[in-house]
Every structure is written in structure tokens, then in C-alpha cells.
Length: 425
Image (cartoon, rainbow, N blue to C red; front, side, top):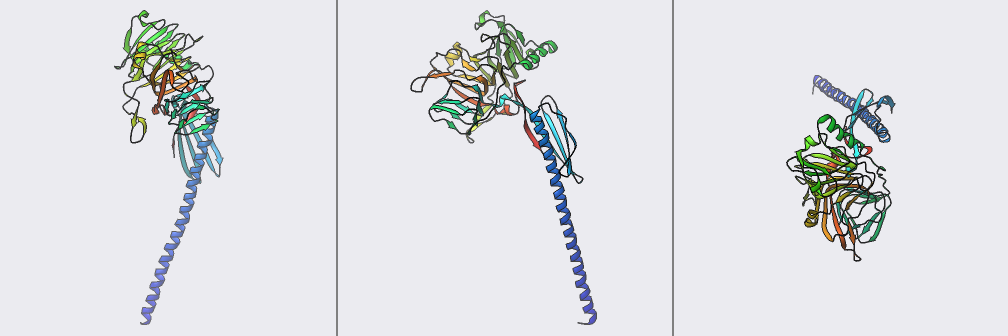
């Protein structure tokens, strides 16, 4: 190899090493820059999350808090938070900035409702859950959970004061936890429900507000409602029935009866809350179920493959039943003849509970609730003989309507708190 060739060979290798070295340098530089960008992005994200958590803590302590946060220095960056409220939700938008990089976290909250329970009993007193009772969905009691037999609970069960098992082997397939405090307001008044019903009458041509009378309501599958006024359980003494579209009768989706009782049945087509309040004693403020009260379609259907109940997307109807005192399975020929009683609704008893009118009836079947029941007191639905068999009354089969986790009947009572329904980063 001549001298010129050697020089060219050396120059070629030198050029290769120079190019390779430059590429390695650029790669190293980009790697450092990527690490810096990754660090800055991570910091901005964490600052935004911290801002959201600070705002949420403020909202959980004060549900009316909407001040937001402006220019808060945090961990070398800055937090800015806005809170926007409408009739249904609070939207918390948290922005975290670090070294010119900005990240955003958006959290949606909704008022927490008592409709999220399959069964809630403030004070169980001496009432028991017994063999044949089944609850699918969240269960809570503010006292001890009394057990006398082999009831089955498919959802999470919580109580404030533990368990009292007289006899039996209860099944807690969703787990059990004690020491959980979820109080029910004392002497809860349906002021918002009353206001909505009055507004529907005064400003929208409705007729769903009543005072000082009993009201007989029959829901019809065609979207109408038949209503009458009178006194007591004998509907033959009531005024002539009036049938009209539910949306005309209750334009705000609320029926309210003050200082009276309600007698209800039928097949609901629509969304409505029925409330009976302002009772001065146990003689008023009660809602009597004189026959089945259901939706056009089942809100929950059993999926054998999943071994659980799932939402039925074809069901659009929704019902809330609110009573100052009791919601009562009435002693009527239809209820006695049918044996089983079927109710599609979320039930709320502010000072009383869910019970039966005739506590001496022989074993009569099962009360099927597809929705939920919330009550200040656990009232009598069945009594047992000395062998643990039902002597009088009904078994309970409760299937929680999972739609109530995110959507509830109009103006259904809330806990006064907010809960997170979505978190977007």
C-alpha cells in the first residue's frame, strides 16, 4: 500500500470516528434533555394532582367551597385551581406548572345521595335479618346488625357497632366492616321536595302539591297517572279519579303531600319522586303500597355467566318514595292474594321505617325491592317461631339498582357531602 493510500485510509477512519463521536454526543445530549423533560413533565403532573387534592379536601370540609386557588407556589412550581358548579355537579380543574410545562387534572363531583344504599337502617333495635333474606348491594346500619338465621349479603356490609348474631350462619360475600359511621339527619324535612312541587303547580301548571288530605296515586304504563283525594284506605269514598300525563301533573318530577298519607300502586313510565311530609304524629306522613309498584322494564337483570345482577339498559324509569314516618305494605286483597310484593324504587323513611300493616298475617311470600331502602328505624317485616321459621310476614329480597350510583330520582335526599364520579388527567 502506497503512502497516499495510507493517508486516505487514516483520513477515512478519522472521518468515521468524528461522525460517530458527534452522533454519540448528540445522543447523549438528547438523552439528558429527555430526562429533564420527563422530570419536568412529571413534576408538573404531580403539582396538578396535589392542587386537585387540596381543593377536594376543602370541598369535603365545606361543600359550598368554590374559592379556587390562584398562583400558589408549590414544590418549585405553581398551582392554579378553578371550581365551577351547576345544578348537578362540581367541576374542579387543577393546573400544575413547572419550568414552563403545564399539566391539567379535571375532577367531577356530584352530591352524595342516600340512594346509593341497597339497605340502610339507622337503628335496628331488636329487628333481625333472617333465613331467606337476601341483599344484593351496599348495606349499612348505624347500630348493631342483628342476625337470627342464615341471611345472605352479596354486597359490602358495614355497621357502626358490630354484629349481634343470635343464631345462624350469615354469608357476607361482599365483605363486612365494623366501625363505619354514616349518620342519617335527625328529623329530616322534605323542604326541597316541597319547594319543587309548589313551583311545578304555581309556575308550570301542575297539580302535584296537596295539603291536609290523603292522596290515592295509580301510575299507568302509558305515562299517565290517576289521582284522587279523600281520607283513609277506602278509595270508594274518594273524589272522582283524574287521569293525566305524569309530566303535566308533576312538571318538576315531584309529588308532595303535606299532613296526609299516600296510597300508591301501578306501573311507572317516567321519573318521579313521591314525598309525604310534615306529619305531626304517626297518623300522617305514611306511604301505603296497596299493590305492586314497578317500572315497565326490570332495572336489574340476572346474568348467569357473571353470577350477579347487571343494569338493564332498556329501563329508563326511576322512582323515589319518601315518607316522614313509614312506607307500609298495606293489608289489601291484592297484596294478600299475590303473596309476593314487588317494588321498584329507592325508599327513604326519615323518622320511621319500611314495614307491613298486618303483622299477624301468616307466612306470605317475599317482598322484592329492586332499588333500595333507607330508614331511620328497622321496622317489623316478619316474626319467627321458636324454630327460626317465619311465623308471620315476609322474607326480603333486595336488588340494588346500580343506576342510583350516578343517577337518582328527582330531588332524592342527599348526605350533604360530595363524592368523586370521574378523574381525568
